[in-house]
Length: 191
Image 1 (cartoon, rainbow, N blue to C red):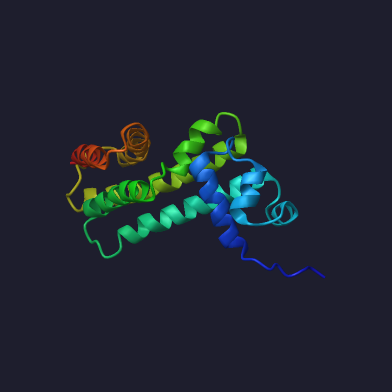
Image 2 (cartoon, rainbow, N blue to C red):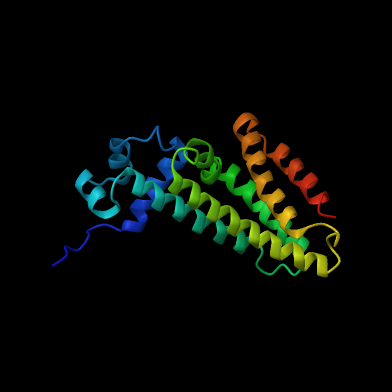
């Protein structure tokens, strides 16, 4: 009979995710994870597998939470263009308010070139986010808010690609005003 866990696996996963998010994959040791999750090594391995499996679960958890935050940011907004702006503002706000550069972007530079499973997961995340923007762009074109001559898929990928630029500027300058001004230029490119 399986033993009942005396801890909340989702809550401990959040602790591990936050540590990976802050320090990165390579700088996070198993001892760091033991300390952050307040679990014994055996419990960590039994529940999540090895460090890499725990990281993959953390990355997926991060994407789920992030996409939900973007969706929540658009709740009640009728204008597709305003919904796009709300998602972009949410990305900047979350990043600066939590004082952490996007985990997906950090992982794309640190791990994606070396781990196919990380690269695949990040590709899925980018495609999902780009598709959400593409749908809003198409609605915006139909509503006359966005130039109909522009390719919706390319615009969506441009927006998602620009997110990496926001976070690079955050890493280098930690200037929310600068990121907000960059987002305004991005919004102008849609019209």
